[in-house]
Image (cartoon, rainbow, N blue to C red; front, side):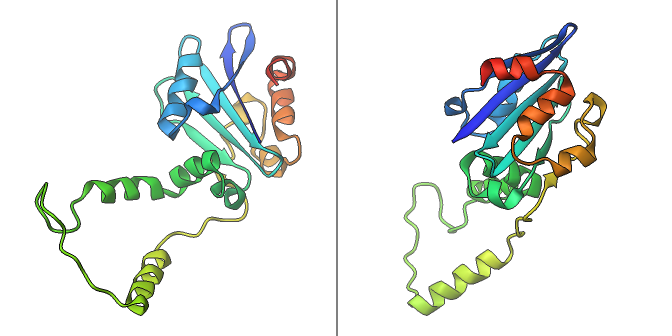
Length: 183
């Protein structure tokens, strides 16, 4: 079970809105939702949590590049929304997209690919070689732990949060009431 919310900073404090994850199919969708929630291109913080297993924070400041933090990358990488964040942080998503766009079978568009014959042993060897180049996902935090320093959540605090981390973050931001209203 996931919980996700957007906190948008305004002149009067923070506004919260429930984030519908059903509409989020990629990290770009999440960033677009955050930018749409921004008031006058001010800061938006997207908070995502999966049943105390991990939490993620995405910070969007106007048109600047988003910043990310995941509390437990290993746990997050095993979930659909968490894997979007860990893939971005590890840089594996871009490489996969580039490979998908290449024509690796050597055929022209519309041409049938040649049929190759492999024994099970050769196929297994190739699978092992392909997997060995992937960067391992760390068991702990991943990303920019300083992304909320200037908002009242120190990097040391962020790195040690567990349990009800989103409530603690909201409390430090002064946004407890607005976050609880959408929970």
